[in-house]
Figure 1 (tube, rainbow, N blue to C red):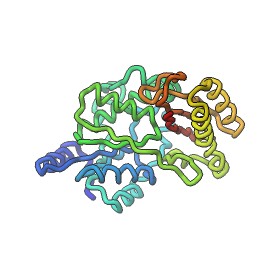
Figure 2: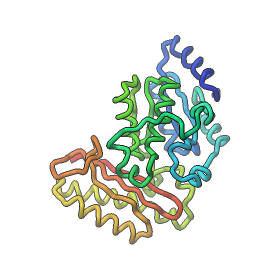
Figure 3: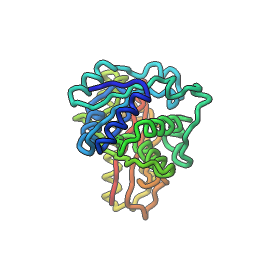
Figure 4: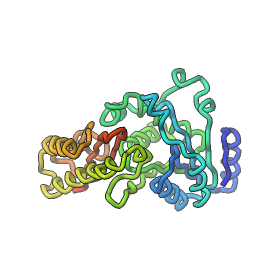
Length: 284
């Protein structure tokens, strides 16, 4: 596996692959790789001849400087995992290369309507940071496709909307959430959980699954707002601090009504110092 830090050197590789008629996939990450990330790489390998994995802890998407400083960085372990697969190229851009004018003076890419709801309401500016850096990476690598996990469903929709609206010639591929045996969605932030918190953490997925079963049992004819309030209370009873628990239309994350059949139930909750997010699809 080769590694590139500089954008011109990376682009030279891409030009060579393109000249050979090879299909290219990108898997953007912030490192601290786990089995969920590696499943995205495997999905990319099944769809393209060449796979680029980027690792960059993006400061623009952190609205808490302490959160950015403490985000787990495990580059050597990440490198070993990628070499075992193996990946064609690891891209490790420098912050100064992506933001040469500094964060405050850099151009931002925003997606109105989707950026300030759900997670966006609790993390101001977060999604502008995500869409900005993903847009940069797509422009730098110019892949045929880019692969993302569905654990952050809102982020996936934002990136798809951005790529569509900006006419970017890339396919955005979403892959199912990878879970631990007890249902907890795999996440780099699970590292923050104490053993006792880790024991409680599956409650988030359990409440999402319970909501999905209730909706399906009633063929969608249930009061979603009551269901949400009940789930919030049950999560508090389990020792979590929920930010939201919401039934939405899967296509655009608008509030769902009885007539909607393609739904997603999304939730975010704090457990100790870890912020957990998860979702389940409901297709009636």
